[in-house]
Amino acid sequence: MNLGADPAENHRILQEILSGTPGKLELPPGTHELADGLRVPGGWTITGDADTWLAVVERTGHPVLHVLGSDVSISDLGLRPAPSDPGEHGGDRGTGLTIGEYLYASPPDWISGVEVHRLRVDHGALRTANAVGVMGAVRDVIMRDVTVTGGYTGLAVHWGAVGDDVSTLVGPTYHPHNLDISGLMVFDAVEGFYLSSVHDVRVAGAVLTNVEMGFRLLPGDNTDRFVKSPDIGSRIEISDVDVSWSGPLYAVRVAGWGRSEIDGAVTVLDYRDTVIRDCHLRGQGTAGSWSPILVEQAPGVTLESLTITT
Image (cartoon, rainbow, N blue to C red; front, side):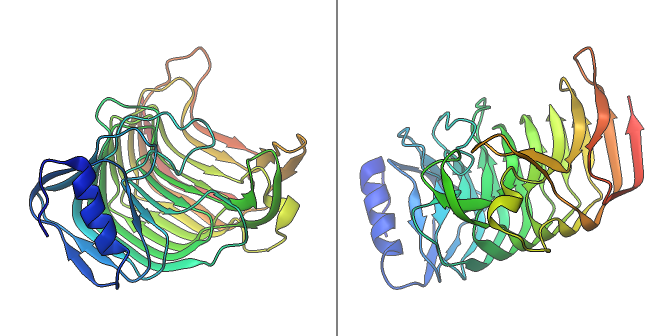
């Protein structure tokens, strides 16, 4: 493999490899510029080292790495997305890494068995795109020691659905689950992480520094329209999170209600066996009305041992 100074050629070489028989792709040290992001099918292991970076230079809006299959391992790698502004419903675009998708043309196969270790995503001064997205039909993911600089949300975990856009969904919806995330570090982003309409998720040992929001636990706006599963909102644990924030409204938001963008209908998610514990929130809001913790119609979420310093 011979990567050079031509972003288009680098992209061609790497995508051609990844489109072949699955195996192990070992990237050499250095910053390797790409004209576009790379699609990662199932079965691949991609590794680098502390000095390995993939940098997309064309503003296509595609993730630097887009995992579209099961049994993928990514480790010891830095990702620099090109500047992009994917908008409110483009959480899986413009990222360093996206696993899965938000909107599907037809019912997808589940992606499972993905591991991410020692990943770095650098958005620089950009604050409009997420850094890592776990979207839609994704389950059984292990994520360890991900470091994010800049961007909007460091780690966005969101349900997905079949439909052309968020206002014309036809269903079904797909909800990430069996996720084990630890060692997340987010610096200088708008938000550390959020979980939207998930179940069986553990987030532990996160450090979220100089963010406007620490994290949010959300129900998803179409949870009850297409899926009646009793698992959604169950067995979620967020623990040992250190938040340093200075945004306008809150450090942590826990919401049970969501408004559908199809017709404006409001539904409430019944959380069960869900806990937020052992978190330290430091800072204060900048608007006239703010709160370190905002809880909205979420009586099924237990809050334990939360400390607040203003």
